[in-house]
Amino acid sequence: QVQLVESGGGLVQAGGSLRLSCAASGNIFARNAMGWYRQAPGKQRELVAGITSGGDSKYADSVKDRFTISRDNAKNTVYLQMDSLKPDDTAVYYCTAAFRLDALGTTDYWGQGTQVTVSS
Image (tube, rainbow, N blue to C red):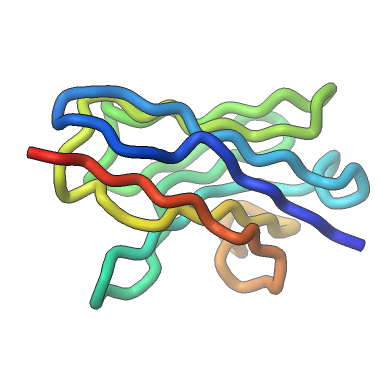
């Protein structure tokens, strides 16, 4: 059974940092791309960042140079380091998996979400 469990959300002031973690069950992690989506109130869910099993990554333009995605294959965990946070980053952040980087967001593999709130 596939499980993705996020942690690390919380409340932070603008300009601050948070690190999100997503622990994945082994059979979904090793060969798959992993990624983070977010959904703010009243908005569609959007891709934040994704990373392949080999370490290639992509980012939404709005988070480039502020967020960094990484993965630890030995721990079956993917991370999202978020720096210079802005109030517009406030959202529920979801971890997801897919067979390819460009397929992120199209599968049924989602975590339960973790809330990130950035105060001004």
